[in-house]
Structure formats: C-alpha cells, structure tokens
Amino acid sequence: MSIDIAADTKIALVTGASRGIGLAVAKDLSRDHHVIVGATSAESAEKVASQLPSASVFVADLGDVDAVNAEVEKLLEALGGRGLDVLVHSAGVYVDGDVAEVSRADWSRIMDINVVAVADLTRHDSIAAMADAVLESAPQRFAVAGLSMGGYVALEIARRAPDRVAKLALLDTNARADTDEQRRRRRGLMALANQGEFRGVTPRLLPMLIHPSRTEEEALTGIVTGMAERVGKDAFLRQQTAIMGRPDSRGDLPGISSPTLVLCGRQDALSTLEMHVEMADLIPRARLAVIEECGHLATLERPFAATALMRDWLVYS
Image (cartoon, rainbow, N blue to C red; front, side, top):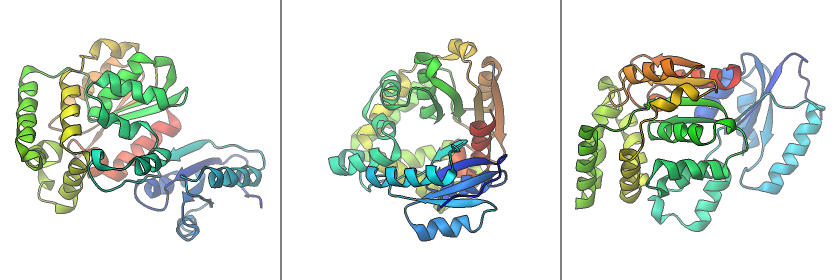
C-alpha cells in the first residue's frame, strides 16, 4: 500500500504520538508536514491520524526489534523511495520504584525504548562521566537537549565532542559553576537526605522549581514529587555531587558552532533569565526564547509552549 503525499510536503515520523508530548508534537508538525503517527496500538494511532490534515500510522512495539524492522520495511515501501525529513522519538516507558530497585530485565526494556543514556545518568557522580555515558551510546551525530542538570551534561558533551553535536538546546540551565553559597545549600539538602528525610527535600525545593502561582497545584507538584521519589536518595546524592563539581563552562561557549536554543521560564529562580541571556550572547548561533509565567521546569509547567519552541529548533534551525 502506498501513501499519497505531495512532492513538496515534508514527512515526519513521531513515535509515542498517541498522547502527551508526542501527541502535542504531532499536532504541531501537522501544520506543514505529513505526520506518521507512531504508537503501539492501531486504534490509538488511527484515532490521532484521523484528526490531522495529512497523516498515516506506524504501529509497533519499539521493544520488539523484529516487529519494528518489519514495520520499517512496510513504511519504506509505502513511501515509494522517499525518506523522512523529521524523526521525533517521544515513545517511553518507566517501571515504578526507586532506580536501584528496578530489575535488570525491566531496565533492559526501558533502555531499548527510551534510549540508553537517560537511565545511566543517575549512576554517575560527575558531569564528565554522565557526558561520556551519553557519547558512548549516542549516534555519531545527533541533536542534544538538556534541562537543568541535563543542560550541564549537554554543555560537557558539546565541549568533549563538538563535531558530533548537530544541534544544541539548553533549557532552564546555566554555564556557571556553583557559588560557595549554592554548594552550602546543596550540602544541607544532602545531609537531610542522609538523615532519613529524603522525602522532605523536594517540598523545600518546590518554591525554586515552579512558578510562585502554581505551588499549590497538586497535579503539577505531584508530578515533580513523584519524579524525585523515583530517582531515589542515592541517585539524588550522586547528582548533587556532580552538580557541585561541575566546571564553569562560559569560556567554552564562544566555540560552540551548532545552532543552539537557549530557553527559560521568565520566573526561573534557579537558573535566572540573566544567566540565559549571558549564554545566548556568548554562543555565536544561539537563539534566546523566554516562556512567560513559568519557572524552572518549563517542559512541565508550559509543555505546549516548550514543545513548539523545541519543534522549531529541531526542524528549522
């Protein structure tokens, strides 16, 4: 079966497109792309495709290599020799429980679907080691985006392997090293966790993490708290150690040649607007984007605005 697509229409495949961020990306891309809706259920994929101007479906369990290969062969045949212009991998799974408690079999499935490096970042206590873990599993050339600590890792990746970074996105992060006062606060939170009060850490951080007007929104605060609990105390301690030991990266910024999105919430209390302006000024091909009425967790607080900006960065930069 062939897919009828105008010759001048770009083609985008979005996995995990039946809900959440994947669905938002699919809808946004549908303005000027033929969207191939990726999902594990034919019913959910077809439901989304029916709502888009030009769409078809790609149904496969991404953890089943043989099934994926078979579907890819069918897709290539249906496209009649045309390739993809855009690929957005938004599919993902998680297994409930602390990182250290998840079984090897479950981790294997998570790795297969979510891309290896995400889980690995909880196992290291230095930004350099996290960057090496990503580089070991990443394609030869790739786009990298990082939020908060992920931004520190993204900057280290760009420093270590500039020729491999096709595009860079720095979200709610900064290029400066921790100040003495910041290290003191982190050590206080680590001491609290070591005293058996790990569950008390996130409530103390919430006013710094999200916009002041949303600290009482249970739906949002519940997501943030749940994420912290799934990371667990030990990984939290390793991450804080890594953050405290990170270098000042401002001297490396003028050497970044990749198209770069610098994105922040205007009311980010941890990585301020001033810090993002500084990065955008120092990176030659940077674009600064500011999301209004938004704190440190832009992708959670304002997902549609963040997704639209990320989409433009991936497709047009």
